[in-house]
Length: 318
Image 1 (cartoon, one colour):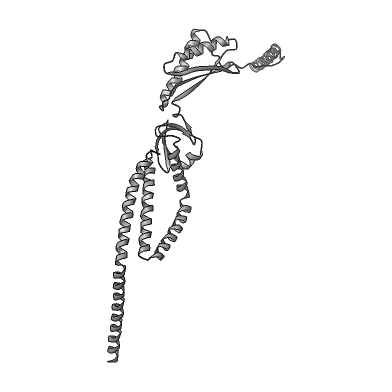
Image 2 (cartoon, helix red, strand yellow):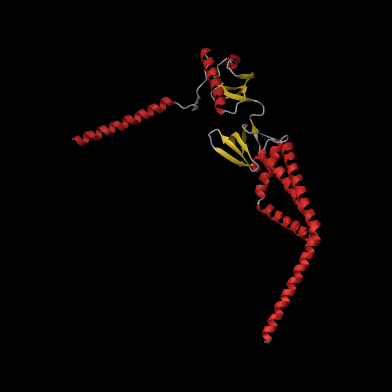
């Protein structure tokens, strides 16, 4: 009987404690109800402001950069910051300052850990952001960077994609592109062609120069003046460089075609005017060596060897 009474007492005590706790929570909820409503209103207001500013920033960044990924990222980050600010204010209204402090501390620790873990990604992202603002090149530009030469296919926040002249697609991290030299062939709207040519030492140099220049100037598509100047005394020729410009194109075969036209025009003009482009020539200097004595000695040696062979042959026949 005592045991049953003690069990009943324990159940009643637990029920009373639970009821008391529920009443306390209910009372607290009623007291916090106005603050809860205000907090919800604050969250809704900040969410609305965030969406509005997100659209505005997305439009404004379009005047700075054409990179859609960067524009979306900037506007999304701004929206998240505004929404987080509204959340912190709402928690403060609910008198949950401890939760706000914990969230801020946790965010700092997580941010520090992610910074160490993804520092390469972060550096590529920052470089991509800077390039989107500075615009050293754009899509379809012909560039050379990091030992790769080709047309820019796309520019992302982490990588830049280049299609090489051989048709391969290369993805280069933006950090490498940002800190290495970039040659942009598209920015000036024209491209220079340099041809190295040589003429014989006995040639009339001003005449050869005049013929080469007039030949190149007749090529269709030449832009600007043609320049030519002699550069060096070669092994078998006097060499000159002829330079001319063409309207820029990011199609390499058109550039090669203009080089081809220049070579053909110069060769035909030289042939018509009797100007020779010499083959490489090597002159061997043996000093005062008398080749007649050398050949005579060599012939006598061969003759003596032949006579001994004949005698040996005769002895064997006997």
